[in-house]
Length: 183
Image (cartoon, rainbow, N blue to C red; front, side):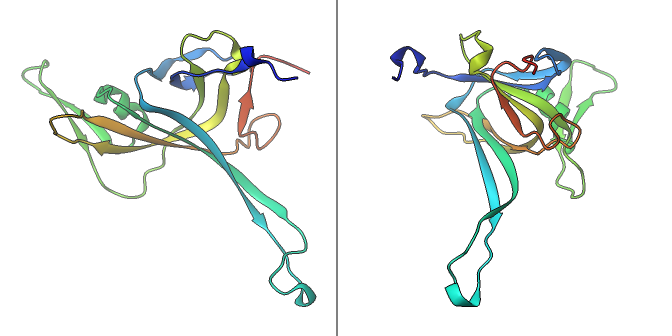
């Protein structure tokens, strides 16, 4: 029978830079202000062979891979965080006045996204059974700088979850629950 005490709602917190014990790394990035919530979805692709006799109707479905996506918007305009996960983001500190700084985003191709383990935690919930640990995450960055009367600027976070080839089990995409549990 279902338990209504296990229905959860509320905002989430995203942390990029989690070690194998579920603790934050020294250079972890925490984003605890969101607008519109945090979503984590997975997408599995399939090869579906057909035969001449069945026409376009597949006779089987064979998994060819699974990736994940983490999407949210944040009003946290701390560009110092952006320089940690976006290889195209630069911080320039004035040579004569170190209190003056600017952030520059280049648009050049060919730079790989750094990848780290991340976690999505419900705000105010300390039960790790409710956490989603994503094994290998690269954060994609886009600005949404609207200057309007009834809205605020925000950063759009579209992170990609990749299967980790160095994890156990090999290809681990995510763990739901306490990451320290062992067999």
